Length: 81
Image (cartoon, rainbow, N blue to C red; front, side, top):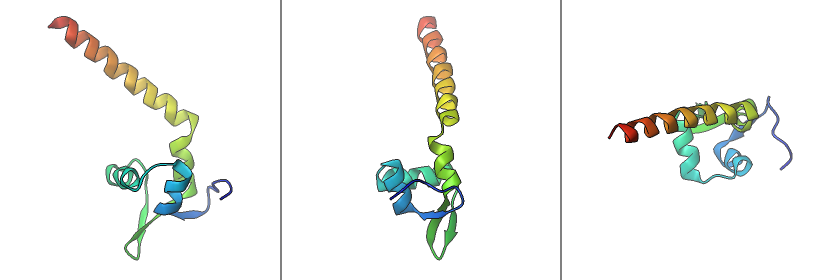
């Protein structure tokens, strides 16, 4: 497969290949709304832009900010014990 095209529609299997994740991980992403998809004929279809959004550097920086916030809160809670 070549690169991900933002205006193309992909199946969950194709998204798995692009993201290098398991079937259960894709299902979890869909269930939790991490990847937005549309159900067509009982199967999910995912826009390429959604896959690109997930692997973008902006998404990574947002995740790091949340991680840092949780880590600091955990440290404070442990120190209070």
